[in-house]
Image (tube, rainbow, N blue to C red; front, top):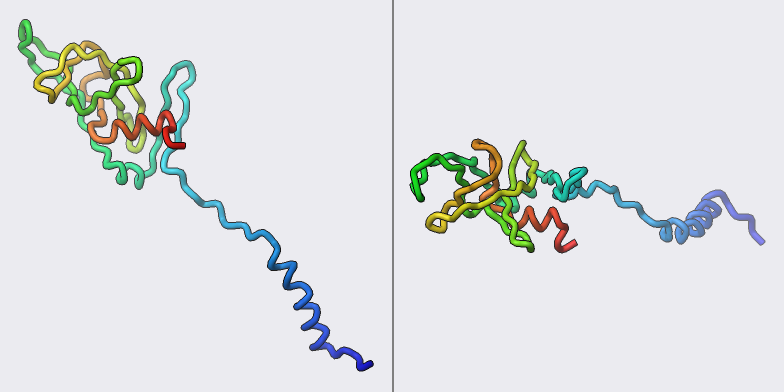
Length: 151
């Protein structure tokens, strides 16, 4: 029997190790970024939603401010108003808007609607203060995100 030279020995060792290397689980880097983070607000039924810029862009979220307008319903007076597009109803029939207290952050806020004028604006009895940013496009998506619909 002929002795194995150094090159041949190395080749046999590599071929023997090949199946072991091939069977090892390859770890993919875990750098998947979730589009939304939902954090329950202690002591309430609400959550604080934080979205990535890409998620906000994908949903197409748009906001406006709660305004105050002179409304002549029974008698003319200044009233809080939001676009009716901002209003969302839950399964109990309660009405809500999503506020945008800071960029990429959203919190549902209960409102009391007095009446809807022309299908375009909701005149409020109660709601967030005048000047508060509310979502007018993307409310349904935020509601689904808060309750993790589809997950």
